[in-house]
Length: 176
Image (cartoon, rainbow, N blue to C red):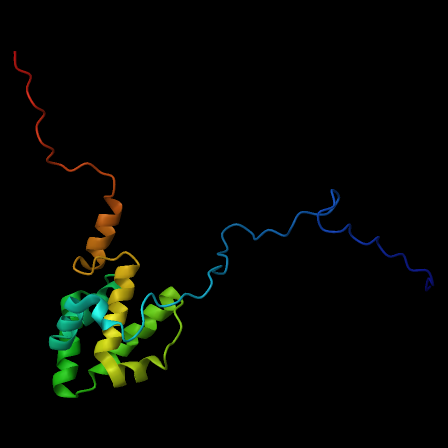
């Protein structure tokens, strides 16, 4: 038997109405998608003169800043010395070290949602590797990293903020 009359439920009350159902909640334990807008680089590719020391070190011995950048981007999984050594071996054997360094620019951009500017990461490193590494170094400094400490040093520093030093000066004695 078919019934010709269909009963439809009443339409839900408008949003904000006291009888409206609460908004849907995500079940506990399921991570939410990131609610972060895309970022911007804190400095331009050719702003090398804003940190002359880093610029000089990058031009004279690029394995040092590359190692520092890579250690932080890799979150301490591999040390600065290992990254710098790999970079140097690739440079000496093939001259294609820019391929290795561009990987860390790509990783860093993904971590901080930075735009791929002014062009593809590998093209930036191929055409102007020192400028690219200086920009990456400045970006990490801008985000609060002390590049000389490495990943683990920065995490230790972050965890020790507000803790009193172990060796505090002795209190002054009272004299009569």
